[in-house]
Length: 399
Ligand code: FAD
Ligand code: SF4
Image (cartoon, rainbow, N blue to C red; front, side, top):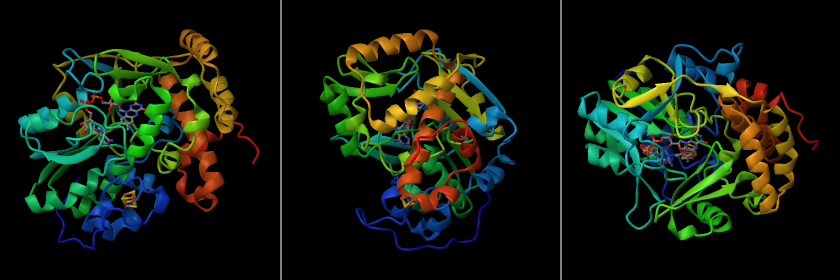
């Protein structure tokens, strides 16, 4: 869909630390670190919500609001659970994202891959790069669970003359990317997305680790798992599991970035292909193919992965409804009760796509309340229609 355009407009990039146009809602996506800041008023995910238009240009149509599956998971033509037959050591899950990126590069589909390594000094400090070798891509494996300025490399792309590019990123980065796609002068852009929620600044991450893990300094990665526990993997390979219901929500309430508390693009609706985990059984990854470009990418690794159809069981609605006031009041259960609750919910609770809907409902209701309280003037324009429908299923606390 991408066409090379005449020279685009430029404006002066902002200095690091300078106030951003989206103010405190800025997710540090990186656009404003480049001369593409000229387009910020239209492009920024937190200034201008434009899902239907961007979905239509990206996928050929916007999401079908009469189809519950699309209301929740966005435009798609296929969905499955998958895992690499030989997982990549040190990847966040089984490394499907890194494997696809490597094939895209080595099979000549693209000349470079935008991905996120970490700085030498800090394993969780993101360092966006344009990878030109499989080794560069592998060095970017595993989540950097912090806001990452992926789009800060956009000027470098133009300077280096790349014409075929793969970008790996989360929803807010991809929304801004799609909005300036026509200005990048590329012949072909591929977008491989991951879902994303509850991201934090580097300082916020430290607070989360310090309040939640018994050994914050040795955590190499963590994930909010489908068994309703946070799994922290430590340097020595040990996995520490902390039940969601035991999280110190009273201390963690302000830890998530305001951008993430206002986000309704959990499932990365504008990527061509999305690789996450939350719609899949435990141990598997969840793949959403949004369009033919996404299928083209997935086909490159079909010999490396096992797949199975997505499944769904349980009923999330009562659990979501109960979690709304509990989260609102910052209630923390004693650890023994939290563990018991976790075991109970794991046995009878939502699984597969129903777990994904549980997570989407919980976050969208929380975020809707956050916006309503803190940015009431933005509410009508910023919340997309699909999110309004999801939130509308629940009774929210009176203001
Ligand atoms: P790997 O092969 O390990 O590759 C990971 C890729 O992620 C790398 O290419 C790297 O460039 C990229 N990356 C790392 N950090 C960032 C970052 N901060 N911003 C942008 N790109 C980054 N999935 C869900 O199903 N539900 C969730 O709630 C969820 N939350 C997430 C929150 C964050 C902050 C991130 C980054 C991802 C989240 N995911 C979520 C996606 C999931 O954790 C895995 O990243 C995904 O399943 C891919 O796993 P993998 O083993 O194939 O990735
Ligand atoms: Fe700029 Fe991105 Fe921040 Fe919006 S989110 S103000 S586009 S850096």
